[in-house]
Amino acid sequence: MVAEQAAQVLVASNRGPVSHTVREDGSLDAKRGGGGLVSGLSAIGPDAGALWVCAALGDGDREAVRRLGTRLDPAETAGQHVRMLDIDPGVFSAAYNGIANSVLWFVHHLLYQTPLEPSFDTEFRTQWAAYEAYNAAFADALAEEAAEGAAVLVQDYHLCLVPGMLRRRRPDLRIGHFSHTPWAPVDYFRLLPDDIARQLLRGILGADRAGFLTQRWADAFAACTTAVLDGQVDTTDGSADAVTCEGRTTRLGVHGLGADADFLRERSHRPDVVERMAALREQIGGRERRVIVRVDRTELSKNIVRGLHAYRHLLTDHPEWRGLVVHVAFAYPSRQDLAVYRDYTDEVQRVAGEINAEFGTDAWQPVLLHVKDDFARSLAAYRIADVALVNPIRDGMNLVAKEIPVVSDEGCALVLSREAGAYAELGEEALVVNPYDVTGTAEALRQALTMAPGERAERTKRLAAAATSLPPQKWFLDQLNALGG
Ligand code: F6P
Image 1: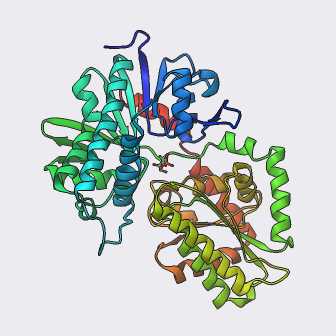
Image 2: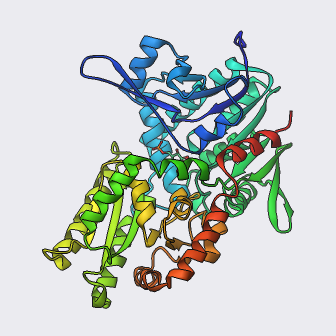
Image 3: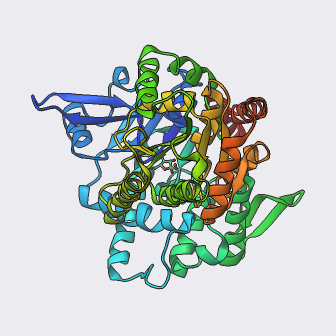
């Protein structure tokens, strides 16, 4: 049954634009989320009949749904209409933690230690059934809410099965899927059991259009469809732009989400950021000290530990830098339900502590590690950074690499992994590293620290221009327009 006030444009993602916690006094606290999707969707305005379907992520969200109903109050969601799905917590956890974050994320970011993992056993099959149920809950809600011929933009690896499921329920809809992650190379994707690999690809191929952040990820997806499903790939100038499989054609699109320059420039000059700049300067000590900044969620793919080892190499091999440089590392908690993430967080803290113990003096702390998420402080660090270290093992895009040049006060040299999606647009102006090469990264840090201020400023200007060429609003509208009307 289609809802009475059916939506013309729908977005579906696991994490929605708002999250709730229950305060001690029992009242609900709604925290708005940021990010590209939130500002992208705002481009079509509050009257466009758009609806965002997302999952309740925790007890606070579930309580909000119980009290307020599944349709949230637009006053609490930056004006967006949101339907929050209260999926059974066990099903949600198996789908989100078990499959999305422990299998699909690992496959696309090449994170397994393959002598021992993965091992697809009966527990995996149970979790997979939950992933199917969770995807079906989204497909049901979208089918119910969408107006005739509406456009539905399904996001990410959590919801790979939704396009296919939704097409079966509502063949009239225009369906897009967008991957915010990399896509695995064929041999790695084929670690998955064959039936699961087929199901995932068929799920996405249920869309009219599958979007990716870079051509590299689109090509990898296309190669997987050929290897696993015998899909026929159309190319233009060697780049995959459509896949025909089992009688249907799915177009491929590349939309390299950029930084939101207007928002960032305004936000980074507010008093709370200026205050934090002063506090950071004090912790760094000495205005002449150079600052290497990294800001990440403590995410296995971000390669924070090797980044710290590279910094240690720099201090070991180039003692002239001791006392003259500080590594400001913000590593914000992520996915702490997973033991492997908790262990990784501990390892980041351990290595940072080791470097401080080995090299620190009364007047100099070589690493300033902060783990409490503070957006204003991140912006403060962006503004004062001399060097930005962005060295992921693999990353869909990496917006930090794009945000720092936009916000930087005096220019910042970018040390960038060639495995980040952002490399496609920023590689020419960055010092590019192989993320596994610790000594190579140390050398790139040294070069970045010694880059002449004029060159650094010029490169930063060019980085900022490239980083902002596709702002979130345009990124979103391009995808919507490409789905046709
Ligand atoms: O950064 C890639 C990404 O897939 C985002 O699109 C998404 O918001 C995030 O990862 C998922 O992270 P979390 O598990 O914290 O919601």
